[in-house]
Image (cartoon, rainbow, N blue to C red; front, side, top):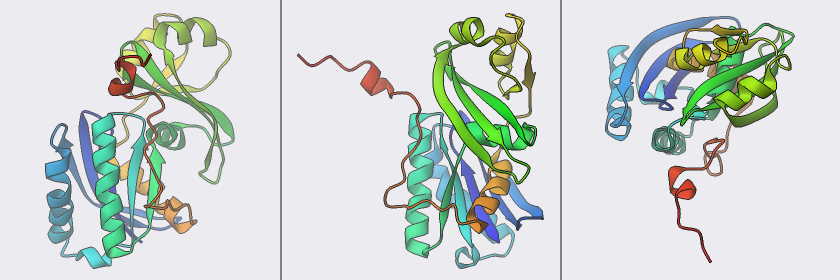
Length: 227
């Protein structure tokens, strides 16, 4: 299966062109994206990745995209672009939570894993998952919390804490919480997970799928209250 995977959830994004099945994975090309210009970069970079490998867009079997949490604008651009491609090419789409990707990539099989991401404003995204040996991460709970509040309230309650963000790791370690700093997930990691989801039929409906912000947008937070 040939898959294009896209991550536009953070300040820096990436695109991966990869091929694989349930047992094998081959990365054909991984290219970075600069935040703030995702809308201008995505289509040309996808076309460039295919051209570099002498492939045509019609040969792509499916698409995978990070659905959240993260940058509101980045997530919308990434999802909208791939939804459009899937509708035009009549190809399947699957979405991957970045929190879930951390748990699947770095968590222990048959154990509950808690993924943590920097949400800004002194907050963190939290995702608790039950990771199976079959490579499935079932959601237990996803929420947003204040970093200091999480450190005070959750100490001793959660195990196997993972984060790719050094700021989050340092803040929790300063509170004597055992958390492991892991490498960040790029689009190739999303592609690896996406291939498995597409093969097993975990497809998203392009007409109804939306991003998973977990928290409200700035427009909602700072909107003038209605009387």
